[in-house]
Image (tube, rainbow, N blue to C red; front, side, top):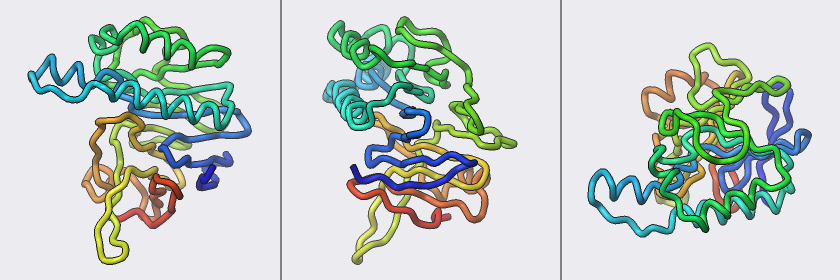
Length: 220
C-alpha cells in the first residue's frame, strides 16, 4: 500500500491513496465527506438523473481501506450522507453493507453541515472528538490547533509533463489538517481559493491523492 507518511502534532500519520487518513498507533481510519446518497438527493431536488452507483462505489473503496489497515476505530468526519433524507433513502442492501463495515469496530460519526441531526445508524454520533493531541471536527475553526477536519473538499492543480492535472488533496500545516472528500460525485475547492489561503499557514503542504500520494507546497 503506497501511503505518504508524515507527522502532525506529534502523531505519525499516513495519507492513503484513496484520501483516507490512517493513524497506525491508534488503529484508526478517518474519512471525510462520503456524501452517501448524493444521486438520490440531486434527483429529488433538481430532477437531474445521475448514475446511481456512487454509494456502492464509495462503500467498496472504504471496505478495501478497512481490509488493508484492519482498523479497529473509524471516524467519519461529517457530511457522511448528502442530507438526512438521502440517509433514510439508502436501500436495505446499502444499510446492511454499512452494518457489515461497522461490525467489530468503534465507529464514530462526526456531524457535518449536510447531516446535522442524528441518523439511524449504529455507532457514536458526536459534534467533535479529541483523541490525544488531535481534535476531529467537520469544519476548521480559526483558532484550531491539532485539528483534523474536512468540509472544503480540497483539490490541487499542478503542472506536470506539460499538462495541468487536478487531484483531491490533504492540506496540512503546523496547526491543522484538512482531508479531501472521500465520496464519489464530490466536487472540490482548489487550494488557491480565498478561504483555504486564509486558514492555511504560509508553509502549508498539499498531499495529492492517487496511486502514489505526492507531497508538494500548497499552491496558492
